[in-house]
Length: 218
Image 1: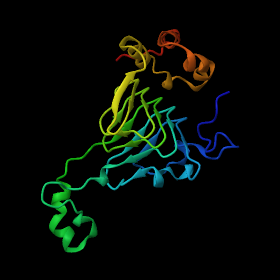
Image 2: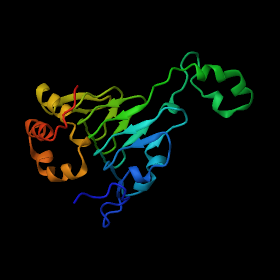
Image 3: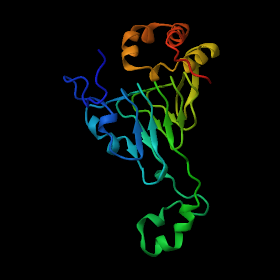
């Protein structure tokens, strides 16, 4: 039997672990089933503690079955400051005549677009994701990494700024996994094949997807 994705604390003895989907209320944050956050000091406060500067229309979208270690932080586009002139000081945000004189400067700043994390992504301790970044399915972000650019699928990155360390599988294997998209399988099928998902090969996952007519075109 698989855990209920609507359960806030899937491990009753460890309240530091929460499924994020039932804890998120902001319309600008979307999180898939079974994605969890591990935080000993405020796991239920993800919107306040882990998503910063969400002042604009840009969204934070996180897929299914992702693992967020303690201190994972997403900086949203509201953190941007204008850099077209001499000063980067955000006069506009303080209102009054400052806002009247400068609002057009702020609204002219190009949007960084949504920040998107795919499925089955592991974000290590203290990872920071900058505005508008896209982290693809199956990626791993090492502890302390600052992600400033898009991360390809099934790629391990680390450092500040993040740099590719290696692919987790060869190109053919990654293609098999993306077509199989196991994270979109029914929960009971994931439960049935949890051991293979954890310890099997891309070919094993592709075979199961084919058997159940679940392969997707790329």
